[in-house]
Image 1: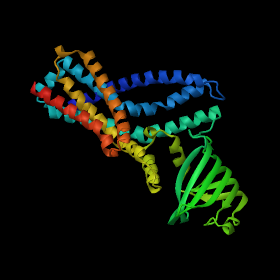
Image 2: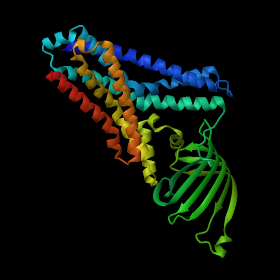
Image 3: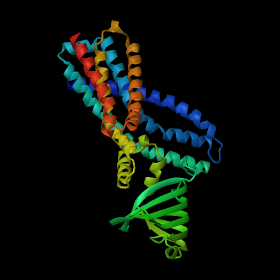
Image 4: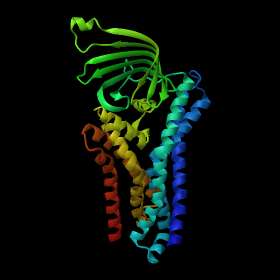
Length: 376
């Protein structure tokens, strides 16, 4: 069986690699056509457009890995069936369970590859691509709101530790490609949600260790009551620079502009905790986190789906028909996986269930297919 395992592995790895190259070439062409309209805008030249598209390839590799595994495995198994190799293997004593076990062992390689691309390579390349594009164009990141970007954190006695004394709302007009902030406003509230301080700054730069260094700062403090006597105590003071300790970091601000599906599980978990601590809705990011954890194992489900094609006789359909069926199944899986993310968000389904249901549905389909071909 070791010889068969190596034979299966070499053929499947070669086929999956070829399918992945074909998918990447197709979407690289489409993306490049879309990026050419931005060429010669500012300092964004054709070279930048090509580099930007290439940096997006790891993200496509992560997204298309289950589809490539399905199509490549179906192709190999269909070839085995058409050449009667699979029949000879079964005659030599290879049971369905044995074939499935061999495929799942090979599938673990794709699980690890998918996880590595989704957790490390794709998020880093996506961030660098966006930063490079903004720098070349000479633009800054802005939120859809006319007032800029908004986020929230907690005010504690000792900066990042100690008892919570209030909450803080941060408003930023623009974020430059080097992660500096422009047009900063900070509103601090006490435990009774009364405004206690307002800070405005022309610029802010992250100094590390959760410290922001503000420049050209105007700080206004407000009294605890609105009586005539206390109102007279409102004071505004100007500072050339001022430091603020905050749980909000450049990474958290970058998350607000990022697509959750392009983020790493680590960043998603950190941002979800931040939202939960500040009593903000985190369901969208929780769904993305569980999808990120479960999606690599979809490659195993795809290999299970491919196995029944090896048992179909040649007269039921040639290799091309089986490959076409694999393409259709892969597209349906991709669409259902995306659809359930939106359905789960709209219907407030548990994030774990929302992420798992598509894979469970297709695994049930694979088991039903294996049961059918064994009986017939």
